[in-house]
Structure formats: structure tokens, C-alpha cells
Image 1 (spheres, rainbow, N blue to C red):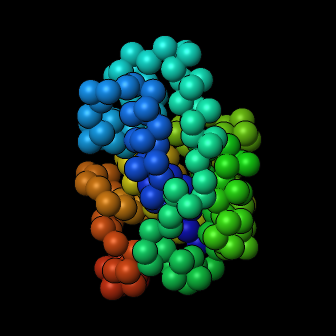
Image 2: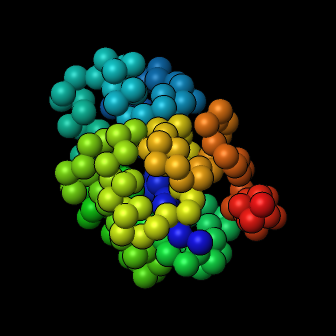
Image 3: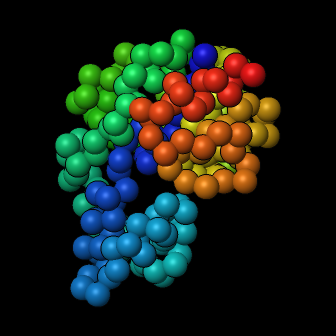
Length: 191
């Protein structure tokens, strides 16, 4: 089985760290749960919702660059799924250096046969171009993401889609914990 992974919020629990940086930029009175919820829709959604200035965006980006890989822990059980897969690939809007720093820190770079980042010039999700590129090269069987934005390109290409820690009408599978992957997703994929 070949799996296409989203990065933030799927492989790694990055949203708590991103919530902290955006909260710092917004200042006192910012509601962390609301920030988290807006970021889960998308970063651009949060920027628009809070009417963040270009200077604030720049400050947030600076703060995010100061984050350590220790601020972005992998989700429990995800490494067992990575080991199980025949081939793993990533499609993310994160920059390549940021992705590799985190993967290298956890010793996970070898799990991935291909990585497409924002640096590769593909249109942003939900445009399917990056997914099509990865699918053509790697014959993807399943895409896993934490937002509809991550699943829409897969569905457009006829690839099975799994929603991680969320609800989705377009997902073929839903998973709250990677420790349940082998009991909940694999049997359904075999049908």
C-alpha cells in the first residue's frame, strides 16, 4: 500500500505550536481555541479571519521559524503505519527545509520516497496537480489528511481518502488515532 500524507496535523501535531505563535502576534485577549479552529481550516483562513496585516504575517513567520522540532511531535502510532506502507510520500504547503528539519530530527526521512512542498511550485491544495504528480510517480492507494482540503485532490483523482481526527463527508475512512489504523482502515481497504 502506497500512502500520500499531509504533514501538519496529520503526521505531526503542529497546530498547538502554530496556535501559540499566532496568539503571540494577536496579543492579549486572543482565544487560543478559536485560533486553533481557524488554523485547522487553513492558515489563509486564519489570516483573513483575524484581518492580519502583512507585518503581523511576517512576525508570525519569524516566530514559526524559531520553533523547534520538539514543538512538533509525531502523532502516536503513525510510525507503525509508515513502516507498514510500501511507499510513503508527503504533499504539504510547508517549506522543504522545515519538513526535512522535523523529519531528520525524528529520524524519519528514510520513510519517504517523495516529498512535494510549497517550494516545488505546484498550486496550493485543493488543486490536484501535486497529487497527480505524486500519484503518477508512486501509484498512491490512500491519502491521509486532517482537513477536507487534503482529501479533495485525492477524491478528484479516484484515490481513497482517510480523514484523521476530524469529520468529513468526502472521506472514505475516518481515523481518530493511528493506533487503530490496522483494525479500522486496513480491513475496509481490503473489501
